[in-house]
Image 1 (cartoon, rainbow, N blue to C red):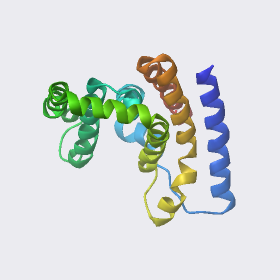
Image 2 (image 1 turned 60 degrees about the vertical axis):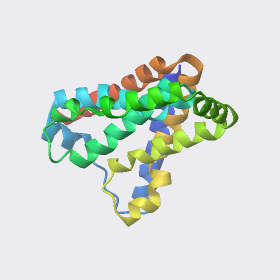
Image 3 (image 1 turned 90 degrees about the vertical axis):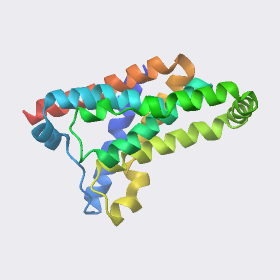
Image 4 (image 1 turned 45 degrees about the horizontal axis):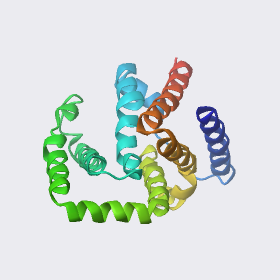
Length: 207
């Protein structure tokens, strides 16, 4: 049911956003999945868009909707990986990104620190309990804004980002609800299916 709701709302809002862009004759360029198929191939799209991206994004934006020292450590690890991968992506091969040792750098350090420092761990736990609602909406906003890179970034695009990323914001709400209601595995699976549908649809239209 959540999958159908996300697909329906995503398409309705997405069509409305691009209708607005077309009506206002705004010069906003979106990076096409067709271009990625042409440049990187189907296998790359399946691995990155359908598998790697949903897992990393769910861990980065939704795992910590429920606090634990492990959840926070894994989230920080994914953020470090994502930032460094963006910095070095033009300098290493495709497979080089997977060999990147972000778990060694971030995960054990944060985890063992929080496990040993009980006062800090308790303070984080209390902070998450008191601010669960703002954390929920912050994760949605950050998830939506992270998709800014789907567009060719310029001043106009940055101004329009709250509208352009509205479909991702709606998807973020649904995925966050899924994570809290059913668990992180369900939100990852829902995200994988949603991305797979988008990639599959684009691939068949590309061919």
